[in-house]
Image (cartoon, rainbow, N blue to C red; front, side, top):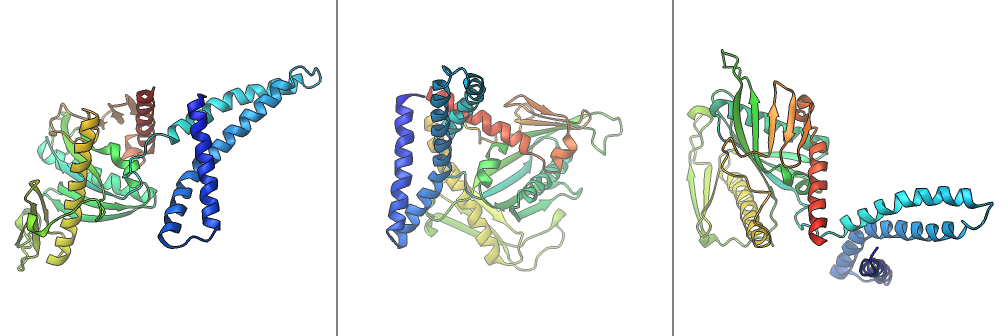
Length: 353
């Protein structure tokens, strides 16, 4: 391990000790909260640094015993184990030291829409929406539907949900993009496989401090909501459409019967989209490729393919194919999420040299 990294690890351990001393001295209020949060963030890394230092000391002690005939076999066995352990510990620490995305710990807004493929795309959008709802359930997250409009055939025109929990955005951010499905639609009499696409966007939930929205920048239209196919027309003007004039972002909401509730939900989505736009602008200055980009929805653009006849799901960014499409559609996405996270970490480590 380089001397620069060694020095950095020592500074982290020293800072953790300093924070503990501050907290034990009885600081209060905002100062206490700030120090407590910083220590909480540092403690997992401090523990791994402690493990590394203990392993390094054990290696020095084992090497010193190699000259002792009685202890040599025991020392060699311990050294073999330590030589396997140390690189893994160092890699864990390097990953922990990578710059954090401040949005990772946040809840998220999920938006799903059919793209190419007509009715079949809308039907698959319904299944993807349910897949993420099940994934949220497996992780103990709260999944609240903000907007859900369907077609006469039961497909999804647009689905928006708020997913509340710890590290939701970190686990779901690589799901943004074009998802492609290949299967024989129920309406296909010739048994031909059709290809359709659905766009998925995952946005970190914005906090009030992230985005300043001036009322004067908003155009708010109210109108009567309607159900699928124009049925169940609401007699009151409860639906809300908010346009943010400076950015051109438009959010329409009619899920609730209350205009007040629809407006509150629409503002939540508007803030998330504005925050993501700001994040995207910053990211574009650092890298030309943004993984969060949804694209146009064209069949040739895709991050993942769900091939039902072959029972496989393939993620094209990391060349990972799993032959368990039924379990994936039941929300078992962690194998993809873990692999995408590891690939992102590896790429960022490589950038650091």
